[in-house]
Structures are given as structure tokens and as C-alpha cells.
Length: 452
Image (cartoon, rainbow, N blue to C red; front, side, top):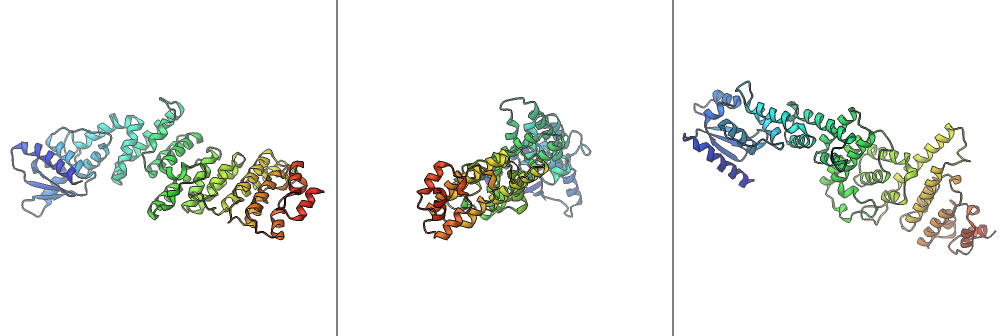
């Protein structure tokens, strides 16, 4: 920082002292001091003119402008403008220059062709003519609030960027077609939210919004959502509380942006979001929203998706399984409602979606059955969520039970009977009955059922 300030002052000296007139005022901007001429500044800046006129000192020699938007680097350019020295206006500095011009009252009202008008021309004729330009300007406004909002720079950027993003979503101008979603990832979540909200108002499709949100989430929460395997990232548990708080707030903001279309997002993405919400201890509203979205499309879930929700980030401990329970329960309730609406009997007829979920749940039980902290009540609780008639055969459930019994060899006869109570031995296939009849881990009652 010190090097940059000294370079700025050295450069300033080159064009200030070329005036061959001694400087008569020092302008302080933070840690930087600029030796300048009052008459050059007053000619363009009404703010500095008023400071000099209203000063109680007979000859004001120091002016403090430390609260100028953009700091020393932007003030240096504003001063250059006062001296008629050329400098480059870019998409990166135009918003700060516009705010500085307002702060210094360098408007056309005070002097023709002043800095405010010059920056306005650049905004309208250059910076805001492309999606990338509008987003870079918007990004620079993060450090210029609230003035950038008062001057409508933020709103102009949002309006233009959202309009151009909608056009790109429908008529891509380059490859890959979703290049524009990557462009949005430079923004902080508050400005990203403004873009998405405006795109919705413009009628953007749910899948278009989803594409932008997925790209933004994977970039901004990459350590939390990039691992879809459920194995986790071992270092994630070392996050300090400030980082965890920022990521929780970011995640909750993203979930609030999700479009109403329930099927707009892949289920594995939603599962990764929910695992992140569990890990970050997000509020219940956030977790409940994700659980509802997953339960609606649960027939598309895989065992790996459910495992994502099950393990801590080191992959060695089970999370509280209540989220999985609520998701399955929500799906079953939906299926019951559909059956009632169609005047059917849910106890007799199960949809193919329900049968698919039952098969996935049984396979999932087999995957988590080896963990010591999985109690009989938790194992049975999940198994019993699936209606009995959703399983044509109980072979997958029998396999999960056998794995559980093998992993918990100290169970007594009554406890083993409790584990087996979720299964109907009469619904086992011939091969499974043969295996069960010779399985010493099973309680005697189940073996007898399998034999006879």
C-alpha cells in the first residue's frame, strides 16, 4: 500500500510541478498527501471551493478528503482532470470516478465538460453496452455504497446486465452457451440477488435461473458443494467461525433465490446444498425448503445422493438422520395424496415412483448399516417409512438387515428380532430364503419362517 501511495505522489509531482508555480495546498486522502494548487482545483471542484471559502483560516493550506469514494488512487485521477492531464477511464474505475465527481461536485452545473459528465458519457457509450462491462462496473460498486446506489449506477448495471443475460440465455452469442453464468460469479451475493430477481421479473425461465444459481453456488461455495461423493473434504471441519458464518449467510441467501419450479435443479445439487446447510447449521427455514424440494423429486434420487446427506465432512461420522427421514416422509405423504386424489387405495397400489424409492432406501440402509452409531430404532425408523406394499420382494431389505446384524454382533435374540421385524420373511425370493435358512445371525423365528 505504501509503495502504491509513494508512486502516486511521485507521478503527481511530475505533472503538478510542471506548472512552475509553487503549490499552496496539501490534500490529505488517507495516508497519502498531495501537494497541489488551489486555483487548479477550484476551477473544477465546487466542493473544494466551498471548503476554502468557508474555512476559518485566513490561508487554508491543508484539506482532508479521506472520505472521498475510491481513496487516493481515484483522487489522483480527479486531480489530474483538474490539471488537464490525460488518464484512462475504464470499466474498473468509472463508477468510482463518477462517485468521486459527485463528492467533489465536479459537475457540468459548475463547469462545462466536467468529470461527472465525462464519466456519464463513458458509462452510457462504453461500459454499459455489454454484459461483461456492466458486471465489472457493478462489481466495483461493492465498495462505493450507498453513493453508487444514490446515483443509480447500481440499478442501471442491474437492468442492463439482467436484460443482456436473458437474451444470452435464449440466443447465445458464443460458446459455451452458458458462458454468461460464469460472468455473474464475480458479484457478491447481494448484487447477484438483484440480477436474478430482475431476470425473474423479465420472465426468465426457471431452468435459466437455475443454471445461473448452480454456477454461482459451485463457484462461491466450491469447498462445500464440489464433492458429490459423500466422502467429504477433510479440511472443511477446520473452518473458523467467521468463515462458517459468512458461508451460512451466503447459502441461506442462495436458497431464498431458488425459483418456484421444483424440478429446475438436479437432485444431487440439492442434496449437496442440504448437506452444506446441515454442516453450516443454517436456519430451519433454509433446511426445510431444501428438504421439500428433494422430497418432491425423490424418485430420481440415488443411493449416493442420500449418502451425501448422511455423513459428516470427514466421511467418518453419521449426521443426524432426521433430514433423510423428513424427505422420505414428505415423498410418501405426497404419494398418498396423489392416490387419494385418483380415488385409489394407497395400501393396495403403489406407484412405480414409490417402488423405485423403496428400492433406493433399502440399498441406502445396506450402506449405513455398518456404522456403530446407527441404533436399531434409527435403522427400523427409516425402513418403516416405506409402505410395506412398495416392496414386491424384501430381498434388498433382508440384505441390509444381514449387514446390520453382522456389524453389531453383540445384539441379543430380542434385539435381533426387533431388527428383523421390519421385514416380511414370506416376501423373500427362493434364493434369499435358502440363504436365510442357513444364516446363523438371524433369530430362530426368522430362520423357521424361511424354512417353512
